[in-house]
Image (cartoon, rainbow, N blue to C red; front, side, top):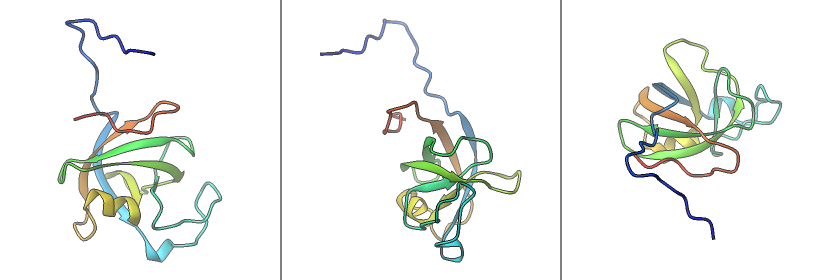
Length: 120
C-alpha cells in the first residue's frame, strides 16, 4: 500500500500551468484531419493547443462554470493570441460552455498516468 506523504507546513502547488480564454469547434471540422493526422471527432474529449505534444493530457477547468474535463491534445491552435486552447464540442459540453462563446479557463498539464484534474 502506498500512502502519499505530505509534510505539515508544506504547500502543494495547485496553480494552473496556463490561464486564458477557451473556444470550441465542432460540426464544420467533424471528420477532417487534425494536425496530428487523426480525424477530428467533435464528440471526443480532445483539444487543440499551440505547443503541447500530441497525446498530452490536459485538465481544463472553466472559471465560469467551475466544471472541469480532461482532454487529449490532437490538433494545433488556437490561431489567435487571445485564446489558450480550442476544445472539441464534446469537451465544451462537459464544461457547460456551448452557446457561451469564449470563456476563461485554467489549464493543468497532467503527468504520465494521471487521469484526474487537481482539486480546486
